[in-house]
Image (cartoon, rainbow, N blue to C red; front, side):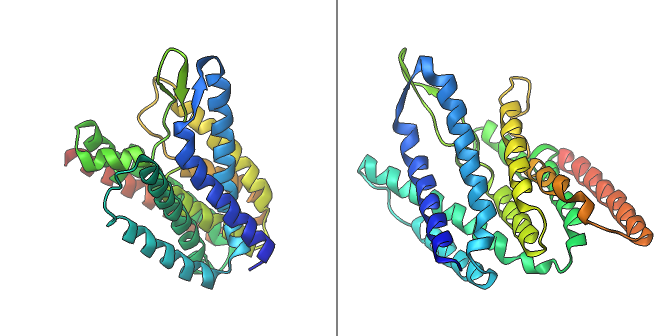
Amino acid sequence: MTNKGLLLWLFLLALWGILRGLLPLLPVPLPLLPIAWMAVLVVGIFLLLWLTLEVGKVIQVKWAAICGLVTLGLRVALSFFPMMPNLAAQIALKAFADTLTLATALLLGVSISPLIRHANLIPPVAVVLAVVDIWTVSLGGFVFQIQQKAKEGVPIAQKIVEAATIKMPTVASAQHAFIGIPVIGIGDLFFAAFLFNLLWRFGLNARAAFALSFLFVVIGLLIAQLPFMPFGIPGLPFIVLGVLLPNWRQFKYTPEEKRALLVGAIFLFALIAIFSVMAKKL
């Protein structure tokens, strides 16, 4: 661990939690709403991805696993806390819980990176994660099913969607609106921390990957707000593109390995197609 880097990371993690709790309470004049919403979107995504990028630098893998399990235990314990009567206490507890959830995802994402022993495994693993994320969110997977249940009014599903989706500003009156800090899916951040830590470990271009991931995620979230877009779009493919594009020339494969990757890709897409058909019939 590097003390200064760790302290900065913890400070910005706490800042994210504070913004998560306080931003939805701050009224924004309607004339400033488009600028304020865009500023919050850009700053919020930058902060989230910076935390995701740097966690693997400031915390060693063995400590990441231990700290991740501790934050997970604290987050589970918080779920048993009774509802506070005071509104300020409710907001503080919810922001703290969300911060613990974020920290858990990032720390545990870093902790599994030793499973990958060679840089050449990064592209196939990243592509598989992106494809599975697309299926999960858009083609009948778990997230898709949760979204459908939320539309049908199932309370637990509505709470999950409420906690993990980007929200448009809420207009409170003729003069003011409220804006929440943007959220990327916790699973996306878990795997993003995993991929960014692999870039650090193998000496690849992590900074360029961060910059491209930030750009692609912001563009993706803006596209998601268009009226003809489906409810929720997968976030991990945008991060995977950002990770792979600036490092593509660093991955070298033999002809045999390329053929094996092609066969694996065909098999993967066939499985996704079968699972999608099965999910629609359930």
